[in-house]
Length: 304
Image 1 (cartoon, rainbow, N blue to C red):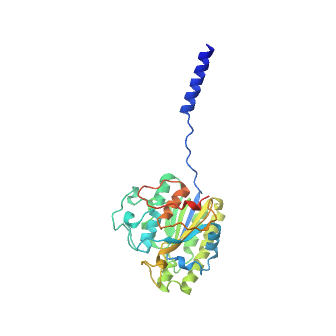
Image 2: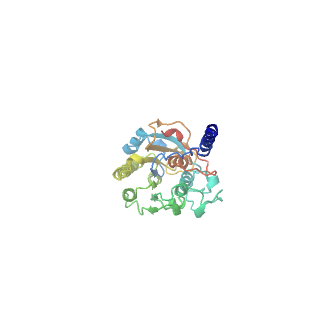
Image 3: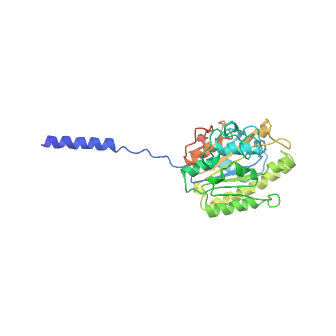
């Protein structure tokens, strides 16, 4: 009788162990908040000479490359689309400076009738996330999937109201504490076209923009988000003389700076980076799975 009872207990234990395997836990997000600041037309060639103390503080505290390459053509809509969509223009279909709809059929269409964006994928992964986009150039709204955003807004007449986008961003951050917000300036591109790249006017504008970056960082701190935030500062393309769109390194190389929660203090990293790798890096931060159609690679070396 005792032997039968013992055998029964052993069998029950074996069954219990085999049917109660520990479930594999999904890794936690690297941070709760991402603040992406885009400076349209900011070429890497300018960084060494630019007076940008707030941006350079982020560089010293985190990781960066000055060799992130734009897709071709080195112009705005096609590169903002690539940054947000994790893919090249041959796949997402936005191919021109001012693309509002794909000139080529998008290889894949997700819900909201648009190629999958990082905003859409975060919305699917975190249905209650606060996601926003604020911008100065109206063309941005066509490549961000506004239906996946809680809030999007343009700062109108920024030439007459240069502080307005910073004002709007500070208000949105402090009131809503977004999980992901993209804040996209139309400068220094505007000055690059009017006065030229690598000119005193261009560098003066970079210093002005750095002040707005400082205000955004301070808003994150004031909102109590600093310990759970990753900052990214980057650009769509650079420029040469009074234009862009070509194949010079001045036009194609742009900075990518990342700092904050769980980011290593690497300084400059050597790994190759393309415009579409930004979305994949943000996918790693929030731990959502990127779709098969994306070609971006996450800059995983920057994470702790």
